[in-house]
Length: 229
Image 1 (cartoon, rainbow, N blue to C red):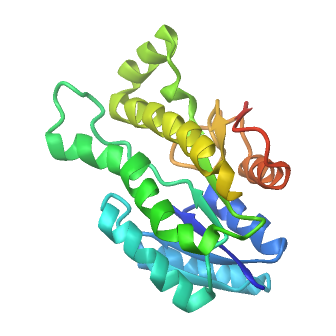
Image 2: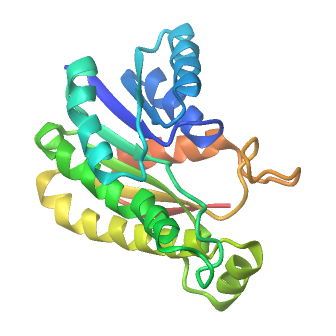
Protein backbone atom coordinates (compact mmCIF):
# COMPACT_ATOMS: atom_id res chain seq x y z
CA UNK A 1 0.00 0.00 0.00
CA UNK A 2 1.25 3.48 -0.79
CA UNK A 3 2.26 5.75 2.10
CA UNK A 4 1.52 9.47 2.26
CA UNK A 5 3.07 12.20 4.36
CA UNK A 6 1.21 15.47 4.92
CA UNK A 7 3.79 18.28 5.22
CA UNK A 8 2.08 21.17 6.99
CA UNK A 9 3.65 24.61 6.68
CA UNK A 10 5.58 24.00 3.47
CA UNK A 11 8.29 26.47 2.53
CA UNK A 12 12.03 26.77 2.17
CA UNK A 13 14.15 25.04 4.75
CA UNK A 14 13.03 22.18 6.96
CA UNK A 15 9.74 21.33 5.25
CA UNK A 16 11.42 21.12 1.84
CA UNK A 17 14.09 18.83 3.25
CA UNK A 18 11.43 16.67 4.95
CA UNK A 19 9.40 16.36 1.75
CA UNK A 20 12.51 15.32 -0.18
CA UNK A 21 13.70 12.87 2.49
CA UNK A 22 10.39 11.07 2.98
CA UNK A 23 9.71 11.19 -0.76
CA UNK A 24 13.05 9.52 -1.42
CA UNK A 25 12.05 6.83 1.07
CA UNK A 26 8.93 6.01 -0.92
CA UNK A 27 6.29 8.35 0.48
CA UNK A 28 3.84 10.35 -1.57
CA UNK A 29 3.87 13.96 -0.39
CA UNK A 30 0.99 16.33 0.35
CA UNK A 31 2.24 19.92 0.61
CA UNK A 32 0.19 22.37 2.67
CA UNK A 33 0.63 26.15 2.98
CA UNK A 34 -1.26 29.36 2.18
CA UNK A 35 0.74 30.33 -0.91
CA UNK A 36 -0.54 28.37 -3.93
CA UNK A 37 2.36 29.46 -6.16
CA UNK A 38 4.92 28.25 -3.63
CA UNK A 39 3.11 24.93 -3.38
CA UNK A 40 3.00 24.51 -7.16
CA UNK A 41 6.73 25.13 -7.36
CA UNK A 42 7.31 22.60 -4.58
CA UNK A 43 5.27 19.94 -6.34
CA UNK A 44 7.18 20.55 -9.57
CA UNK A 45 10.53 20.24 -7.76
CA UNK A 46 9.51 16.98 -6.11
CA UNK A 47 8.17 15.52 -9.33
CA UNK A 48 11.52 16.31 -10.94
CA UNK A 49 12.99 13.96 -8.33
CA UNK A 50 10.43 11.26 -9.28
CA UNK A 51 8.40 11.87 -6.10
CA UNK A 52 4.63 11.91 -6.37
CA UNK A 53 3.28 15.08 -4.77
CA UNK A 54 0.20 17.28 -4.67
CA UNK A 55 -0.57 20.79 -3.38
CA UNK A 56 -3.27 21.70 -0.86
CA UNK A 57 -3.58 25.45 -0.20
CA UNK A 58 -4.95 26.17 3.28
CA UNK A 59 -4.69 28.58 6.18
CA UNK A 60 -3.39 26.55 9.10
CA UNK A 61 -4.50 29.27 11.48
CA UNK A 62 -8.03 27.91 10.90
CA UNK A 63 -8.58 24.56 12.63
CA UNK A 64 -11.65 23.76 10.53
CA UNK A 65 -9.67 24.35 7.33
CA UNK A 66 -6.89 22.14 8.65
CA UNK A 67 -9.25 19.27 9.40
CA UNK A 68 -10.88 19.69 5.98
CA UNK A 69 -7.51 18.99 4.36
CA UNK A 70 -7.57 15.35 5.37
CA UNK A 71 -10.34 14.08 3.05
CA UNK A 72 -8.85 16.11 0.20
CA UNK A 73 -5.45 14.47 0.71
CA UNK A 74 -7.07 11.05 1.05
CA UNK A 75 -8.95 11.48 -2.22
CA UNK A 76 -5.85 12.61 -4.11
CA UNK A 77 -3.12 10.44 -2.59
CA UNK A 78 -4.78 7.82 -0.42
CA UNK A 79 -4.76 7.39 3.38
CA UNK A 80 -2.38 9.55 5.41
CA UNK A 81 0.42 7.67 7.14
CA UNK A 82 2.46 10.54 8.59
CA UNK A 83 1.60 14.11 9.59
CA UNK A 84 4.67 16.38 9.70
CA UNK A 85 4.03 19.78 11.31
CA UNK A 86 6.51 22.53 10.54
CA UNK A 87 3.86 25.25 10.54
CA UNK A 88 4.17 28.14 12.97
CA UNK A 89 3.07 31.77 13.28
CA UNK A 90 5.29 34.48 14.75
CA UNK A 91 2.37 36.71 15.73
CA UNK A 92 1.72 38.44 19.06
CA UNK A 93 5.36 39.33 19.59
CA UNK A 94 4.41 41.53 22.54
CA UNK A 95 1.70 39.74 24.48
CA UNK A 96 0.72 42.93 26.31
CA UNK A 97 0.16 44.87 23.09
CA UNK A 98 -1.12 42.19 20.71
CA UNK A 99 -4.80 41.90 19.91
CA UNK A 100 -6.74 38.79 20.82
CA UNK A 101 -6.94 37.58 17.22
CA UNK A 102 -3.15 37.54 16.89
CA UNK A 103 -2.75 35.57 20.10
CA UNK A 104 -5.42 33.10 19.03
CA UNK A 105 -3.78 32.66 15.63
CA UNK A 106 -0.32 31.84 16.93
CA UNK A 107 -1.80 29.26 19.30
CA UNK A 108 -4.08 27.84 16.61
CA UNK A 109 -1.23 27.16 14.19
CA UNK A 110 0.82 25.51 16.93
CA UNK A 111 -1.84 23.44 18.65
CA UNK A 112 -5.51 23.69 17.65
CA UNK A 113 -4.99 23.09 13.95
CA UNK A 114 -2.39 20.40 14.57
CA UNK A 115 -4.82 18.61 16.87
CA UNK A 116 -7.69 19.01 14.39
CA UNK A 117 -5.57 17.47 11.63
CA UNK A 118 -4.52 14.55 13.81
CA UNK A 119 -8.10 13.87 14.87
CA UNK A 120 -9.33 13.93 11.28
CA UNK A 121 -6.53 11.59 10.14
CA UNK A 122 -6.85 9.01 12.94
CA UNK A 123 -9.06 6.64 10.91
CA UNK A 124 -6.32 6.61 8.24
CA UNK A 125 -3.44 6.18 10.66
CA UNK A 126 -4.80 3.49 12.97
CA UNK A 127 -3.59 0.09 11.83
CA UNK A 128 -0.69 1.43 9.78
CA UNK A 129 2.61 0.24 11.30
CA UNK A 130 4.44 3.36 10.10
CA UNK A 131 1.83 5.86 11.33
CA UNK A 132 3.35 8.89 13.02
CA UNK A 133 2.91 12.53 13.96
CA UNK A 134 6.22 14.38 13.61
CA UNK A 135 6.54 17.92 14.91
CA UNK A 136 9.23 20.55 14.44
CA UNK A 137 9.53 22.80 17.47
CA UNK A 138 11.82 25.52 18.78
CA UNK A 139 13.62 26.07 22.05
CA UNK A 140 11.76 29.31 22.80
CA UNK A 141 9.12 27.09 24.35
CA UNK A 142 11.42 25.78 27.07
CA UNK A 143 10.84 26.92 30.66
CA UNK A 144 14.05 28.80 31.36
CA UNK A 145 14.59 32.42 32.52
CA UNK A 146 17.27 33.06 29.89
CA UNK A 147 14.99 31.73 27.16
CA UNK A 148 12.13 33.90 28.42
CA UNK A 149 14.35 36.99 28.30
CA UNK A 150 15.39 36.08 24.76
CA UNK A 151 11.76 35.74 23.64
CA UNK A 152 10.90 39.15 25.08
CA UNK A 153 13.94 40.83 23.51
CA UNK A 154 13.29 39.22 20.12
CA UNK A 155 9.62 40.21 20.10
CA UNK A 156 8.63 36.53 19.95
CA UNK A 157 6.56 36.16 23.09
CA UNK A 158 3.58 34.67 21.25
CA UNK A 159 5.77 32.12 19.51
CA UNK A 160 7.37 31.16 22.84
CA UNK A 161 3.97 30.47 24.41
CA UNK A 162 2.86 28.54 21.31
CA UNK A 163 6.02 26.44 21.28
CA UNK A 164 5.57 25.60 24.96
CA UNK A 165 1.98 24.52 24.33
CA UNK A 166 3.03 22.49 21.29
CA UNK A 167 5.75 20.75 23.32
CA UNK A 168 3.16 19.71 25.91
CA UNK A 169 0.74 18.59 23.19
CA UNK A 170 3.42 16.33 21.69
CA UNK A 171 3.96 14.66 25.05
CA UNK A 172 0.25 14.17 25.66
CA UNK A 173 -0.44 12.78 22.19
CA UNK A 174 2.55 10.48 22.49
CA UNK A 175 1.03 8.87 25.58
CA UNK A 176 -2.53 8.89 24.25
CA UNK A 177 -1.82 7.39 20.82
CA UNK A 178 0.84 4.86 21.79
CA UNK A 179 -1.80 2.20 22.35
CA UNK A 180 -3.04 2.73 18.79
CA UNK A 181 0.43 2.12 17.40
CA UNK A 182 0.84 5.76 16.35
CA UNK A 183 4.21 7.30 17.17
CA UNK A 184 4.35 10.98 18.14
CA UNK A 185 7.63 12.86 18.45
CA UNK A 186 9.32 16.19 17.91
CA UNK A 187 12.61 17.61 16.73
CA UNK A 188 13.45 20.52 19.05
CA UNK A 189 15.66 22.88 17.04
CA UNK A 190 17.95 24.80 19.41
CA UNK A 191 19.51 27.04 16.81
CA UNK A 192 18.83 28.85 13.56
CA UNK A 193 18.15 26.94 10.36
CA UNK A 194 20.14 27.92 7.30
CA UNK A 195 18.20 29.42 4.40
CA UNK A 196 15.13 30.42 6.41
CA UNK A 197 13.69 33.81 7.35
CA UNK A 198 15.52 33.54 10.68
CA UNK A 199 18.92 33.20 8.99
CA UNK A 200 20.87 36.47 9.36
CA UNK A 201 24.10 34.94 8.11
CA UNK A 202 25.02 33.06 11.28
CA UNK A 203 22.64 30.08 11.09
CA UNK A 204 24.11 26.87 12.48
CA UNK A 205 21.56 24.13 11.65
CA UNK A 206 21.15 22.47 8.26
CA UNK A 207 17.57 21.68 7.24
CA UNK A 208 18.64 18.26 5.99
CA UNK A 209 19.92 17.44 9.48
CA UNK A 210 16.46 18.11 10.90
CA UNK A 211 14.80 16.03 8.18
CA UNK A 212 17.20 13.16 8.83
CA UNK A 213 16.43 13.32 12.55
CA UNK A 214 12.68 13.21 11.88
CA UNK A 215 13.19 10.15 9.69
CA UNK A 216 15.29 8.56 12.45
CA UNK A 217 12.58 9.29 15.03
CA UNK A 218 9.95 7.86 12.71
CA UNK A 219 11.89 4.64 12.23
CA UNK A 220 13.03 4.13 15.86
CA UNK A 221 9.68 5.18 17.38
CA UNK A 222 11.05 5.53 20.90
CA UNK A 223 12.35 9.05 21.67
CA UNK A 224 9.66 11.71 22.09
CA UNK A 225 11.87 14.83 21.94
CA UNK A 226 15.21 15.02 20.15
CA UNK A 227 17.24 18.19 20.46
CA UNK A 228 19.15 19.51 17.45
CA UNK A 229 21.86 22.13 17.90
